[in-house]
Amino acid sequence: MSDLPLIVFDVNETLLDLETMALTFERIFDDKSAMRLWFANFIMYSAALTVAGQYVPFTDIGAAVMKMLADTRGITIGDADRQELTEKFSTMPPHPEVPAALRKLRSAGFRLFTLTDNLLEVQTRQLEQGGIVDLFERRFSADGVRRHKPAPEAYAYVENELQVKPSQICLIACHTWDILGAVAAGWDGALIRRAGNDVLGVGPQPQIVGDDLNDVADQLIARHVTKQPARR
Image (cartoon, rainbow, N blue to C red):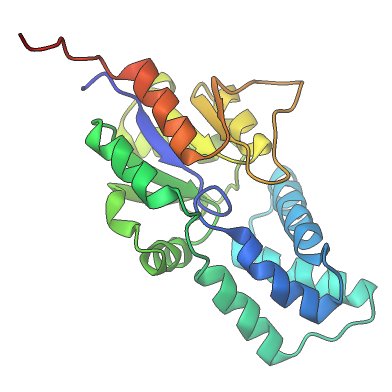
């Protein structure tokens, strides 16, 4: 079992259901696509700031992008709206299959960790609210190295903290940009095809692709866990 890769999880959307925020965005922006537009721009500007050598905490970027989108549409976001969105982001529930799939991986001998761009206190609250915080041995934030994913420094931070080689880690995420960064850094990658997410036909590729976390967990177990010989 000591040869099993360490499993590191992305959190937002990979483990937690981002779609639970959609109704609030639709109410504020009167647009069903507003949440997805916000999140796509959130990730884009997080990466842009990182490439530009500027560090801004993840939640601050999210708030700035939301205001920018509102300004382009002539919408004023009130304090109550901001508070509601902050609360929704901090209390997103896990996808239905996630708790059992995490326990399945732990039972198979895998050690589980997280790496997210969220501040540590934000992801801790998210995972506590979701009832799954105790399933992870340790939680990491890109804030620890002040470089958001998919910058190589974010993945190297985890390697250094755990004192392991890149080849000993597998990232599970539903975002191709995150998998791309991890595989480029020497990690294995397992992509979950959540809604709107799929394989990109260029660049570093995931070793595993599944329809949900249970599917990915089964593939990891089949790939890495040695089957015990049948008892006579």
